Length: 331
Image (tube, rainbow, N blue to C red; front, top):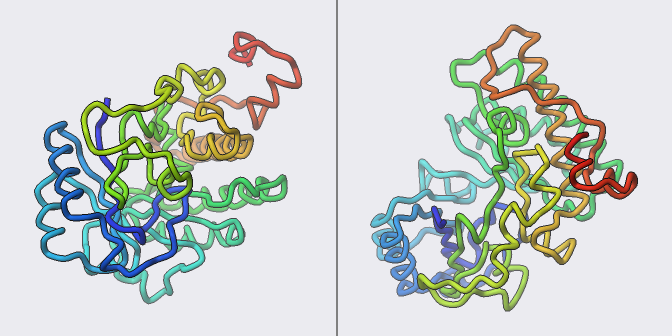
């Protein structure tokens, strides 16, 4: 059942996930047509959907702002537009990280931090700066298809360093959240992206897509115009129950990105090894962080202990030991 709608207002709108946007064109010509925006707003109102609007780095005309204000929504904007659109979720790119002076004005912000593989070694230092000023940080690792053994190990070390910083901040009245470290503590079931199930995207061409990534990265993957009878081919494959390993995995915070699945394995319901390894590195970091919180005498908001496991990629265990799904569940 759909719960919200993503609306990409421009070809140059700030990307918020694993995909890349197209090269910027003339900002006056790359906008979602006003008529299409009106259709999206009406669709959201009729179906009681909240809308996440993805903004470009230039100011919108009054007509666009008036339509946007008609529906319950969240603004996702590039960091450079934080003053134009206050009270928004800000997108920060690691290769364009703000100077110290630009960070001074941040107060309890919600941040999406997109980290390039080349900047992996700077992760903990960047997060240490942001955690002091933010309410929540959603970390998105870019270029994961190029991750190798050394990158996975470096990521593990970086998260270990960040968890020490988080431990110090945990004594605050409202300690900050870091998606890859704290989300798993409060989950007892999968909380994946759910593109095509809980949300769809209206792209700048006025058509529907599973998510923005399928507009920017996979030409021809449109679901057609904005309407209620949306034809999603093999929609059942998007559901957790049709992903045999994922449905019994307890890396509950994993995004299980269907775009990356399709890109790296050619199947929307099959994550790549990189996704699994990264999610399990994060799961282990969360387990150790929870352990540290308890040892420090804190009162962590955790539904249950996170059990220690002996693998970093479920597919590797199933393959090397020739396990059935039933046997895997016993590990």
